Image (cartoon, rainbow, N blue to C red; front, side):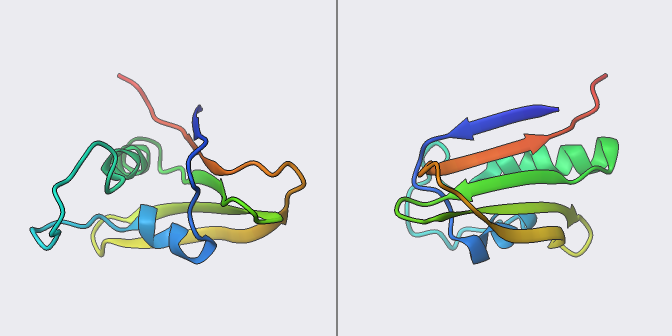
Length: 109
C-alpha cells in the first residue's frame, strides 16, 4: 500500500467521489493546465489500482476550519466512467489538519 499526503486546501466532502471517480477529457477548459491542476495523476493511480488489484482507494480530506475530515473509499467503473462508492462519511477531527491523503494498492510487475 502506498500513501500520499499533502497539506493543501483539501476537498469539499460532496465533491470527492466525482473528483476521483470520473476521468474528464476534452478541450472545455479555458485555463492553461498547470502541474496538478485537474488531478489526473490521482485518477490514473485509481485506474491502475482497479486494473491490477481490483481494490478501491481510500481518500481522506479536510479543509481549513472544519471540525471533521471526509473519508471516501471508492473505485471507478471504467466502462461507464462513474465512481463506485464503497464508503463516504464525515469523521470527527480534532487535529485541525487540512489537505488530502490517498492510499492505493498497486500490483507491480
